[in-house]
Amino acid sequence: MNHHQERRYAQSEERAFISLDLDFSDIRPYPTQDNGGIIVLRPAVQNITSLIRIMKRLLPLLNQQPLEGCLWVVDNPQVRIWCADHRPCSPRLFCLGRASSR
Image 1 (cartoon, rainbow, N blue to C red):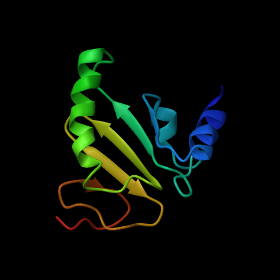
Image 2: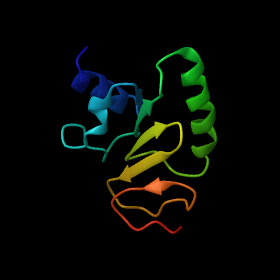
Image 3: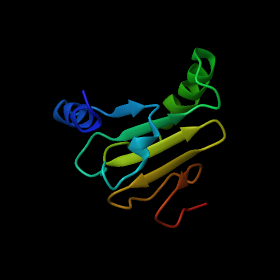
Image 4: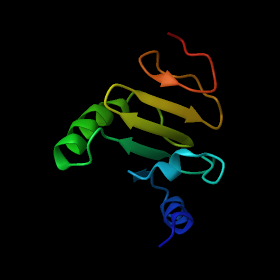
């Protein structure tokens, strides 16, 4: 499956797409509107321990900020969010493309 097929499959299932592939952090070929959201994980080291650490940091944030229609880039110190509709962002998150309420 290529990148576009993977993203379309997630979209058809109304699911978020989670990847380690930085290609998905480019919103030009992978726009965020009309999808369940894209999460790009950027662990310092790609091993199970780092992935578990990042997922433990990510999971509580899903209750604070809607994912649908957004791109989240998650690395160890921060979560960067860009949403197609420029919705307000939780003050504890770093949101791109609009003023944060920090």
